[in-house]
Image 1 (cartoon, chains in turn red, yellow, orange):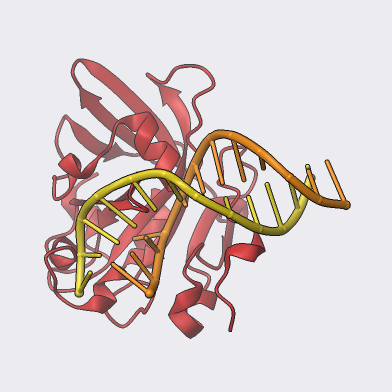
Image 2 (cartoon, helix red, strand yellow):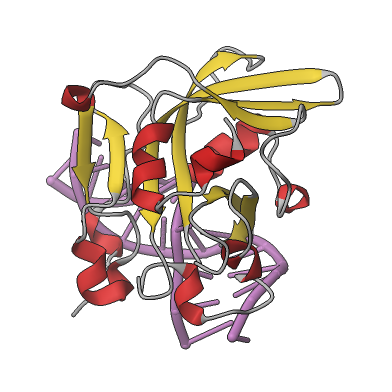
Length: 191
DNA sequence: TTATCGATGGTA
DNA sequence: ACCATCGATAAA
């Protein structure tokens, strides 16, 4: 994808990333997944977005140019892979929550869920701030997903974000067998 | 099948 | 203290 693809609002990019191929090439190993689930984090005003904390060492990358990876460690042991979107100065990104195995992944490898897909593709914080238009890591068009096959719902694990938690900014390919299941209801913070 | 627990470390 | 999670375990 050209850089212009990413330099648009996160919700638009989240929609168009469905069906796209995520290619990671390292140590002679090429791994490819087809994106089937995304979440849009649309800016500083979005209380579920890390950028709502303002410009910090961690969130700085989200405010930078689009088409760059934002990868962070969560719960001390899992990584989450995001694509920085929108204009420079806007703190927005798209979290890739699930891909479908396409190439270079051992049979049975699970790629549903942000942590599992990072593990499968070998993505870590070493990839943070890296450009997404390089041979080592890039996105390319895959099978287009028609609007009739796209489902939308609330983002996972952001119940702390008040009204923003209800916004339907999670998008997925409805019939994919590789969409994440999400946490059971019990994990949610009480009112 | 669904629900609950705890690991584990960056970040503010 | 709080997490944009996951795998094991328990309950039903």
